[in-house]
Length: 204
Ligand SMILES: CC(C)(COP(=O)(O)OP(=O)(O)OC[C@H]1O[C@@H](n2cnc3c(N)ncnc32)[C@H](O)[C@@H]1OP(=O)(O)O)[C@@H](O)C(=O)NCCC(=O)NCCS
Image 1: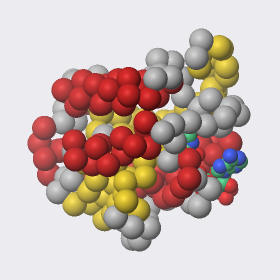
Image 2: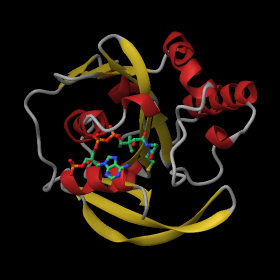
Image 3: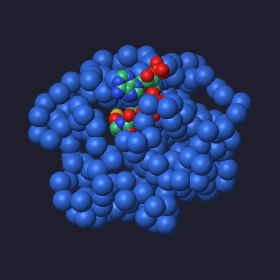
Image 4: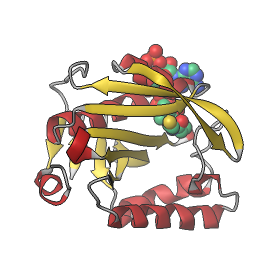
């Protein structure tokens, strides 16, 4: 399964693709300051090999959990044939509300060139156009300027705030909400082989 835009592809995260990404995880290219991820997450594990092991186990566990209240599609972001990050789509009580949220990271040496914006636009296309979502949410710590800027630029509206911890320290999260009406549809994003998603995911 793939989502393609003029700048990148989201490819279903096979073990081969995860293997291509493992060096970025091992060398800490998932890191950012201020800390961007809420607890618990494998990416905060300090030992590099253990970090990769925990990261893979979390993805494998997530692949196996497909319930109406929660499912998660894992994608590897590929730019010019190279695996550079991940962009996941998470269904949250989808049959009741049509709601999704997303999670992403991009290797630190690839940031600041518009890739983060493009990969979020791609996953929104899958959610709204491919799966018929009604609303997409996103959370980011108030000091995660990249993620907040992407949500704002893509038409999300502020939806309050929440507390979460990062490495045990409390911090405020911005909550964002993008309705189907406010989603800016693009004609240059394509979905490939998504029939299996419709067949196997509990969407209704
Ligand atoms: C969040 C992330 C995916 C953004 O990817 P990116 O490719 O760097 O972002 P882009 O280049 O598409 O930038 C998008 C916008 O954010 C702004 N931005 C990006 N990084 C920024 C920073 N560190 N400080 C201020 N603004 C920033 C850009 O100027 C751009 O704004 P614009 O649309 O007004 O021009 C990436 O920074 C990342 O992987 N961070 C660590 C993990 C993370 O935060 N994940 C999200 C958890 S909620």
